[in-house]
Length: 115
Image (cartoon, rainbow, N blue to C red; front, side, top):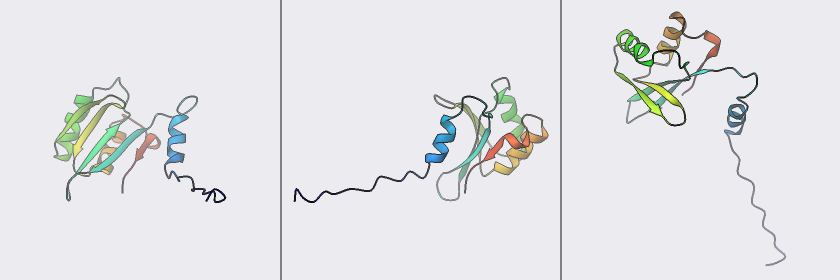
């Protein structure tokens, strides 16, 4: 048995590229606004908006989003991500177009994640 050396293949990390991009957030990188969807239970989902500039009033943006899309939402304080806007339902495309039309962010600085 001592002659038999087992070599286990190293674990493949499918998110290694994404983590490498996030770690290079120092010099010359753009600040993106990330619009994500989280699946709750069954058909229920949650849309999160992260990365808006701190100079904006998150509560005013949330109020306009709720009124525009007829959904409920809240602003959550996350220790790592800062303030995150959460909306009920799949509002990814709606939120992206709203943020561009309102002049809050440019179209090329929005990243839509999900399915």
